[in-house]
Amino acid sequence: MFKSSYDSPFGKIILIGEDNCLTNLYFEGQKKFEPEIKDLKEKELKVFIDAKKWLDYYFEGKAPDFTPELLLKGSEFQLEVWEILKNIPYGKTITYKDIANKIAKKRGILKMSSQAIGGAVSRNPILIIIPCHRVIGSNGLLTGYAGGIKRKEKLLELEGAFIKNLLC
Image (cartoon, rainbow, N blue to C red; front, side, top):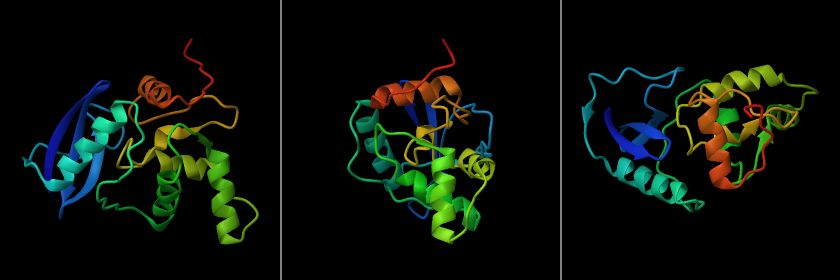
């Protein structure tokens, strides 16, 4: 495993990769699920170059038309939720309840817990590229984000997504 970093308009981003796949992308100093990186060596893997190109497009306010190679590690349920996150269009939002309903329908069950969805969303190891910032509460309000609620708001503003805001 190797690491690299990217200076975004919203703070330094840490990238971690192995086997030329991106395994983690997060804001430096974020509170939740920051992997231990002190022993990782810096190396400019091809996937880091691709991810930084992706981030350049994104922070220029453009929807990137490619995705760097990802290697996701999680439970079957987390992987199922993260797959839905990957398909949320640029500039659009979805609710935890919407995701719960999609999974319930796929599994042929009546109901899925929105709280369980929130738990899986909060463990997304690749912020921004897997756009968990596009998940909002059923009332249209912003809810938690591992990178910080202010960053979530800025990311959605960058994309032109309409959001209700509790921060005013």
